[in-house]
Length: 311
Image (tube, rainbow, N blue to C red; front, side, top):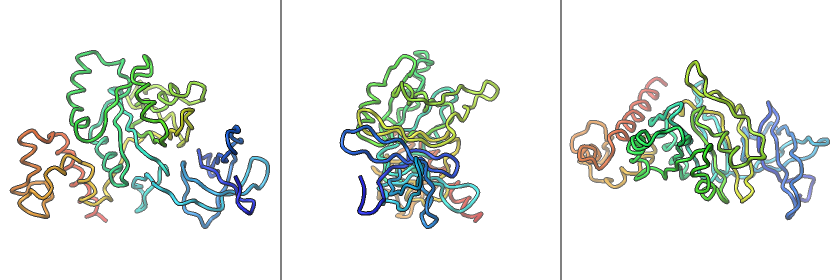
């Protein structure tokens, strides 16, 4: 597909150092052309995997990106070293948070990602990987602790790449959507891609025996087209997903169960922290809202206020 000039349409599928890997758009049902390694024009903003661009050829299998097509969505996170946000992926339709009992499930991290997804109006799904490692009693206990997410925050999927349990349901959820996988190292994002795309070369690592933390087997963000339509974007493991630069109202938007009590607090500007007459606090006391979710909300609000007071 070309414009009136030599510009061609493509999509960024990976990055190799300062070079971006662009997949040219094919014609009809013909096989896709081979990827092109591109630089980018200096006037363009930082480009990420998922961006749709126009590029021009400079030599065989090489080119330069000359224009960015308007994004429909952009997932980013704060950069702890400066005031700017670090982009992760563009033009995505949904987020899947991948975690597992090994290396451990961090509910606060899950809530951070849910807030980040809500901030850009993207649906999120919570995927618990390595179901085969759980005994029945461990499964029941974990299922109970995650119940607030299934009932209020996000759909919940249980998957095992070893037994293939849950993979069919996952494939249905992915079809015709561009999905980004986020979550801690060792949760099994790369293993899931390998199970869904058995002929795709994906680097997979094991948990570090010394620390219990996952190894960063994915060093670059990569887009993998799915044969049934849609694509998966695998991102490097995220141990911290800060939301300190997000305002109070946006953080509250990540806790969808709070919406049932909108306008019911004694004070219209209630922060849902320690104010008298707070409808959210009353719902927590009655069991209508999970205490774990409420405590994570308070943690995020307090952390946001502390970070801003330092700046």
